[in-house]
Amino acid sequence: MKKHDIPQRNERQTRTTNCKFSIRADGNAKRLEGYFAVFGSNYELWPGATESVDPHAFDEALSDDIRALIDHETRLVLGRTTAGTLKLTVDKNGLFGSILINEEDQDAMNLYARVQRGDVSQCSFGFDILEEDEKEQISANGKYTVHWTIKKVKLYEVSVVTFPAYKDTGITARKAEYDKSKKLRKQSFEPWKKQMLERLHRSHK
Image (cartoon, rainbow, N blue to C red; front, side, top):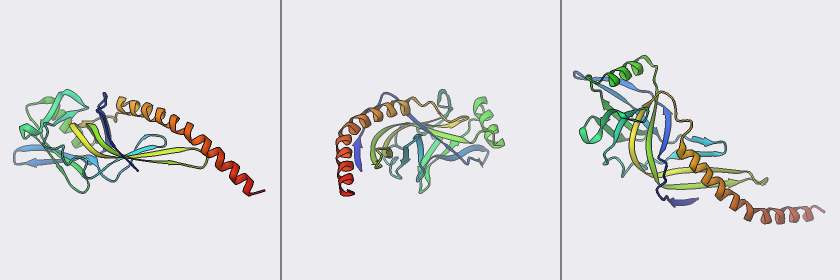
């Protein structure tokens, strides 16, 4: 397993998961609550490549100025940590968020109603990867699989989303980066593979 300190990428990452949002009345106030990131769950980036979030990935991230958004739209702000309208905590399950709904904001009230009806049930978070572990496996026929464990992040926002971000540009950039490094590794792997196959063939004569 290789541990990497990641140079800041140009593309911000987003990951989406199904949430079990809860609607809670806090006195006269309305709150929207759910897990924006889940630990111990593998996220498929593309076939053969998966990712998970380490339980300590957010340890140094929650003191920053973080927003709660609708569909990652910066103009649709639901809450903010520095304003006390977004509270983020970490427990054994994942990153939990509690958003105080502004009842004078029609976008927030519309979203609240859609979540209450079950029409919207997915959540996401926007971040930079600062540190990760990589575990790569190569089968005898040269097929590569890789799993990354995100160890440390810079968190910018959490979002309530209608659809997952299938065309995430950060994932696209990561795949191009990985494919390039895999090609280089494969070139160095081929002579070893050929040697092993020849040795195996001789042993069966």
